[in-house]
Amino acid sequence: MSVQGHDERTVLRIERGWLRALVERDCATLDRILVDDLIDSSWKGELQNKWRVLAILSKPLPYPQRLQDVKIKLYQDVAVTRGLNMMSDQNRRIMMRIRFTNVVLYRHGHWQSVAAQETPVNSP
Image (cartoon, rainbow, N blue to C red; front, side, top):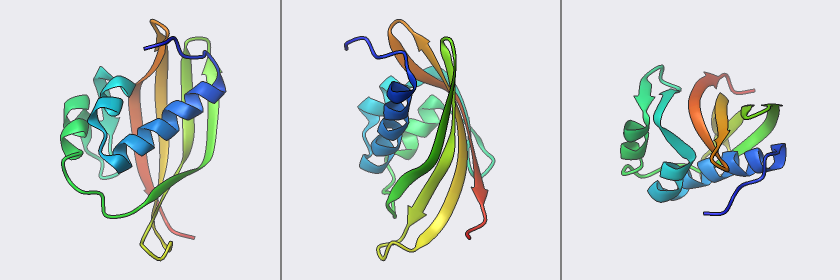
């Protein structure tokens, strides 16, 4: 794997890659994005490690998702990303909105997520 850029644009690609890996059930990509000791506080309030997140990929995903309002703040080798994950039905009607915060770390030439938090928000 080649060295990744050390900038906001690359972090945004990582965020989009994470969502794409979830939607496409791509364990290999998600395995590269998440550190082994990741802690994710899910939208249900459950703490999950990387292995639990990967195990969930075996279940089918019932609706399309897209990121919106993503903001990234770099702190040298750490980036904090915040945004909104919009989940829609087949008719593109918004079913759920999840506000997220992810902490990603740049080490050994790559960005990886070390912590994540998802919180459901009321639909507009």
